[in-house]
Amino acid sequence: MGVKKMSRAATKDNYTYLSQKPGLQLIKVGSYDLKELNTILGIPEVKSQILDVPITANDNAATLGLYAMQEADKGFDFKYDFLEIKTVVTGKFVLSDDQGNSFTAEAGDVVIINPGTTVTFHGESDGTAVYVAHRLPEPAFA
Image (cartoon, rainbow, N blue to C red; front, side):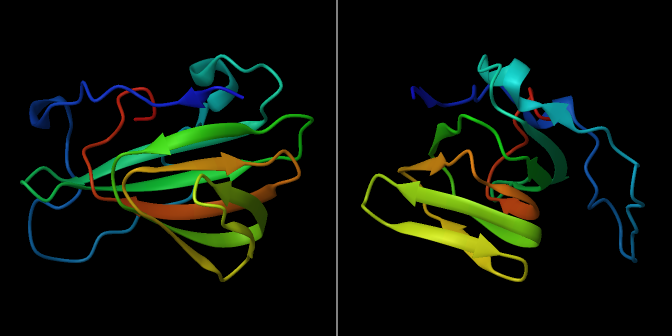
């Protein structure tokens, strides 16, 4: 599996950010369309979807996301150059990293991915997670 790393071409001016004024906000299910990762990563065997939603554009940019993966014959590697906190809401994710760690994260578990880590998302994963990433949105995911 080749390591995939997405572009950093996002600029602060490309998005409408969720955090613009005081008050509560609600994002209803179905408000956004998920992007197919097999197309973005160029790995047809991957069954996975993702979405980035920009929260803030300041120097400490934050992005909210939704990630889903269905069991498939093949997984993929992804290089993180940013901090991401992923909470599994349904199913499970079978993960390993380039540091020798290996986990099965299930509903309710929180995965912290530190910058400089390559994570392998194994094909036996079948779950949904929400995440917050310390970065601007990935243009291909937004």
